[in-house]
Amino acid sequence: MECVIYQQQTGESEQIDCRQADGGCQVTLDRLAVLKQDEFAWIRMDEPAQEELQRLAEHLKLHPLAVEDAVQAHQRPKQERFGDVLAVAVKTLWFVERTSDVETGEVMIFLDSSFALTVRHGANDPTVEAARRLAQQPEMARLGPVGVLHTLTDVIVDAYAEAAAQVRTDLTELERCVFSPVREDLTEQIYSLKREVVEFRDAIQPLVPVMQPFTTARDDWPRQVVPYFRDVTDHLTRTDTEVRAMDDLLASVLDAHLAKVSTWQNDDMRRISAWAAIFAVPTMVAGIYGMNFADMPELDWRYGYPCVLAVMVLGAGLLYRAFRRNGWL
Image 1: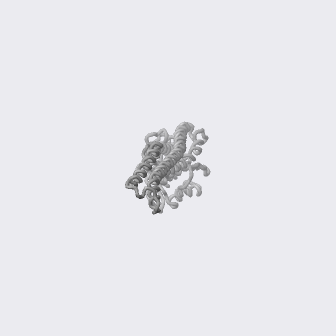
Image 2: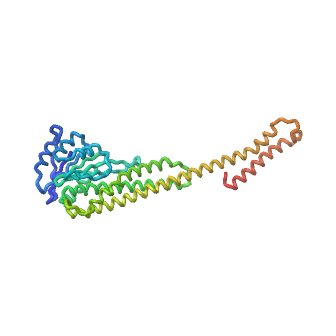
Image 3: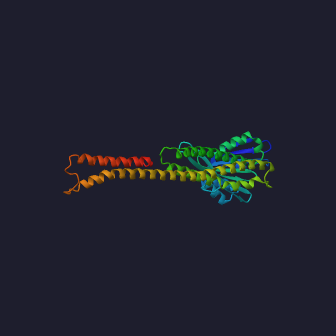
């Protein structure tokens, strides 16, 4: 756990030491108990256990249901109010280039007038970048815990946009392969990318209505923060639209590829049928002369055998030429 105390008037920050005592962070709790009126704390926790979060929650007067949501980390993007505390659940998302997978995590954000508590789950940690930006933008720190909420959501939405650009690159490459003349079955790759886009959509789409209320003035928030939230929501909406478009486009790409696979199968069947018809001519002639009847034509003729072979070759050749002309071979 990390805790930083911010001065709203100056934007300056103070890192608080966190030493474990009886399973909790006693030093941090003591400092939180004597916060001045113009100070607020940002407490950052990474995948805490129930007991670790419980003691802090009791000090901050968090609702038990909010604590349960923060520990379980399987929440749909949402915002809820528990008394004076606003709880916002946001999905984090990043693109793994090595496997071309979209990975997701979660950040639960609790806001009060004197603190911001973030509980993170997943391999990616957006709070590090948010803390760096907040240190470089003291005017945002002056806005209080709401400034933390904006900075963190801004970092997460920027990550959405970066991941969407990388998924778009993979989709463009997949389109090129689908419509290339090379015969390659890409059904599994298309379905895999489709699954990643669906996961992307499920993370970003529910967040849009969660962020919309932050774009209007609220009595308990500084008015100057509203344009910043509008900017974040605009970026979020644009990325959401792009992800929806990629989802629809992938469905079309899959249909086109399946149609192309069906065409390949039809071409193969035509070739097989054409070669079967060609071999049917000598098979038929050979079958007739293999029936061993006494009165077979040309059995006693000196040139009967070469003549039959010539008929076989001629019949097969004529069929081959006809199938080539019609594009079956």
